Length: 540
Ligand code: G6Q
Image (tube, rainbow, N blue to C red; front, side):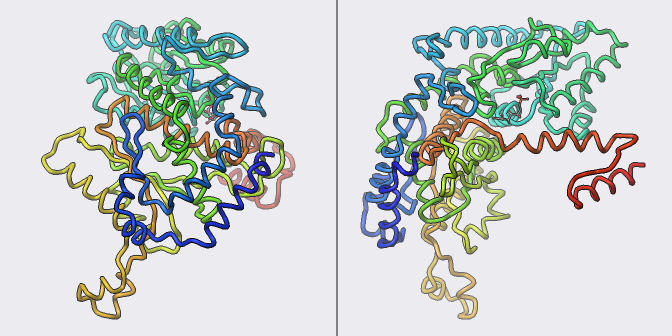
């Protein structure tokens, strides 16, 4: 078992923690080089790790842990196309989705790169026709609205990236993303849609997901209602992204208008596959290609850089230090960019669905904490909401502050105000304000404790020149590989998601009971029975 293999490295970290204090003020005072020594670069990203509760010895011991846990071998196995998703018996090859033409990625001895590029080329051809107004709807009008219907991995990536790359979007084509099975979601989006100018992208790897298929059927009915039931309209207004050609065809979508991907791409790792079709239509094949090159740059950094300088690995190991050794249960993602407002939600899935596991690869309880609770919000909004707790609460919440040197929108000094806030927050969290400093500022004694900041609240500061497609690709790949490294250290399978299954099965059963005319006796627990009955009685 991996955890056992690394037992002495875990012990070494714990014993070092027990005999060392990590005081950021003191560590900065004693080491003038600390900021530069702990700032690393990967692609266009400069990552300042100096405000973390680490020193050289912590890093040395964490890196030893990673090596003992077999992180490097597992990364090699991923790049080699081995079936490292052992519970589903699949390779994990999202890195092949952004392969260059010169790259080779083998699945069972067959290079998959040509297939990846073939789908990308088909997507580009289709996206270009839509963008040029050449793909016409049923009445001969060009498409002006894309409605992506998908959920989880078939939604969060595209919507996050569509919002992030606002500046790169086609001026006359907008995209909407419908995910929730709550009818409010689809109805609200359709309220503003002109069927003659709308293209639905049904994005579902399995093409069986309840939410997506229910919304897709409702969207099809909506369209047919408006075209007098003429089924030939479906071919002009529906395309699919899926691995399930039979189900796509059964739904009524011509498989000529289906864009495929592969079972070696996990949902939450898929937005650079055909799942990115709405994004490619919005930003164009060229910008999409730049995004892929950003992913690729980070893949190469991750694959080729020793752990000592490997930014995703270092971020991951610092996260392990907090989760397992210092006992901090959550991790915040705080982008100082409004266009990254869905980035925390995207990372929540990437991280928590990947590493929210309690059993290791051998099926035995891991015996220590695994994935942290990931959360966050765009700065500066968060500052006026939950940062109070970050500064003065009883829990230490480590996090990443992400910012850009150049504004995407020029409004005088406003970008300086934004970035000034980012730098100030990282500084205040790290160094706080002592009682002496507060008193010296003339604060009345009874208020001094209330206005004191303990500091020592660690953050990374991740800076990039500008929020471009390439930088977005680098950021996403950074976190993909961070999650990978943590999963490898904990010895878990980061690529399955059995935890979402039980709820799906139970929901299907209860949905039947809610609508049944003769429901018979309910046989859940007393609470669930009562809730179902309350709902049924009200609806009756
Ligand atoms: C992601 C998960 C999950 C999945 C959705 C949608 O890794 O597998 O979020 O993406 O359940 O699945 P489909 O694409 O099959 O509809």
